[in-house]
Image (tube, rainbow, N blue to C red):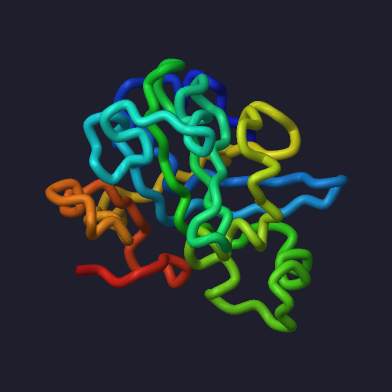
Length: 201
C-alpha cells in the first residue's frame, strides 16, 4: 500500500478523480492510533460553475477558503452545526474543485472506530455517510487545510481497482436546492456495498 502522490489530485477533471478514488483507502493516524477505510462512495463538486459547490460563482469565505488551496489538501467543514465532512481539494491552486468522501468500508482500527462511535458491535452505520465516517476515523475541522501527503491523514492505493460493472453513478445527495446542478451525475459509489449511504433514485 502506498500513499497517493500529489500529482493524482493535481488534474483538471474532478469527475475522473472522483471515480478513481473509489477503492482507495482513507487513512488517519492520530497519536499512533491508525484507522482506515476503503472509499465506496464520493461526490464531485465542480467549482465556480457548479451551483451545488460552496465555491459557486467564485464565492470565497472563511469556511471554504481551503478549496482554493493546492491539490491534495483536506477540506473539512461542519454541516448542520454537527457533522464534520471530509473533502479532497483537486486541480490547480486557485481552482476550487473538491470531492466529498461520503462512505468508506472499514479496513483497520475497527475497535477504535467503535469507541469513537460509542458502539459495542460493528454494523454498517459505523462509516456509512460522511458524518459517520469522520467520527469513526477521528476527522474534525482541526484537520482542515492539512496536506494529504502528511503522515496523519492521507489516501493510499493498495492496487485494488473496482470493476466498471460495479461502479454506480447518480445525482448527489442533499443538494436539491441547487437547481439544474441537483441532477448532475456527480456521485460515484460501489453498487451493492452495504456501507454506501442514501437511496438510489
